[in-house]
Each structure stands twice: as structure tokens, then as C-alpha cells.
Image (cartoon, rainbow, N blue to C red; front, side, top):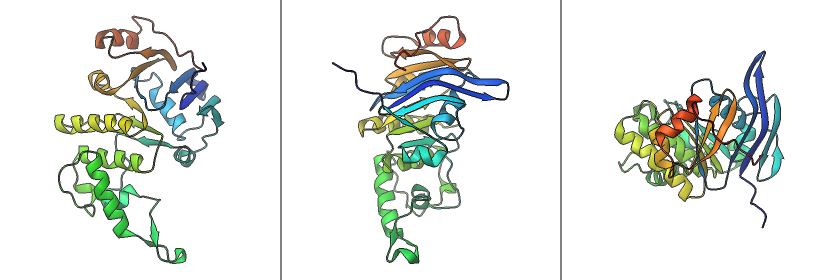
Length: 258
């Protein structure tokens, strides 16, 4: 029986900034409908790996495969076209615009003749209302509400809703629980679980290991620009054991799928 191809496979990825080697022959994969926690100390290479995968920075060498097919990710638009959506800590939302406009930013539906370029505001509002319910916002927030008047957790919910609506295969969450209160954090963690249930895969990056343990299927650890452990099951290990791998006190088992 042949193993199914992972959704994403990064093989022998190198990224250097002049003499600084940020990624050194990194191998990493994400399976279909899987939530992977990506952990490591500051400077371990997590952010660089994510920037390469989201098209934000070009790799120096190596290969990226999506469902077994080699792809070139020259910019973030390429990544989005390939079903990869990234949600950063600051959510990359436009605070002056409404929830509905932010959900469709750059991909607004039009009505009437295309040359008139008229946005279909009614459609955006109705889709936005439905999406907010899906990501767990129970308050009745009008979709015309400016992003600037939402709480941090609600903004993260809008960013996640956008990724889910545009059928992203992979949602990358970079420190989504930073600076959030307890209730908002629980909301974000439940959104991550919902994403998997609705058929998405996620990469979840967080400094708080306890948050990672609550939602992920598998943990990968980076150190000095490489993935040093790739197959940690949060159900059969402890936070302390993972911390020892992060700091280098214990060696992990590297990704062998690449």
C-alpha cells in the first residue's frame, strides 16, 4: 500500500541572508486535514520557514511540493493561488474598512456589467454574517462594523474566516493568541479545531506550548534553522519533554518524509 502524498512537503530548504543561514536543509510536511504545531526558540527559523511557504520571501534552494506536485512560490499571490493563506499576529486587516470589506479585500464580488466595477455589497454582507457565526462569534456584530472597533480576538476571527471562506487548503497561524485575553484565546483555539473539521490543514505557531498541546495533531520542533523533531504526538508526551527538545537537552527525530 502506498502512502498518500502530504498536502505540503518542503524538501532540503535553504534560506540565507548574506552570510546568515536562516534555514539549513530543512524538511517539513503537513498532511491533509492535519494541525501541526511548529515550535522553537526565537531565531530557530520558524518565521523564515513560514515566510518561504507563504511566498513572502524567496527560498535560496530546495523544493516545495503541494500534493506531490512541485510548485514555485514567487510571492504571496502565488501561495494564495495554491491554497495557502497566512494569518499573522497583526491579522493584516485594514482597520478603517468594514468586516465585510476586509473579508473580501482584493477579491470583492461584483454585480452588474463588469466594466462598471460595482461591488456587490449585499452579497459581501450576507456572506460575512454567515462566516462570523461559523467562526464562533455569537455577538450580533453588523458586517458593516469597522475592524478598528473590534477586540483582538474578534479581529483574529475575521482573519480566520477569510482564510476559510476562500477554500484555503492550508491556514498558517503565526502567534494568533499573542496579546489576547483568556476568552479570546479560547475562541481562537476553537477556530483552529473548526478549521480541521471543515477540511482545512493548519500550521500553528505559538510561544505558549500549552495552547499548542490543546489543538494540534502533531508537533514539529525547529532549532538552528532545521526541523530537529517532526513526529511528536501531544497525546503521548509532555510539555516538559518538548521543552527539552526545543532547548537541545534532548534530541528529537527528524522528518524523514522528504
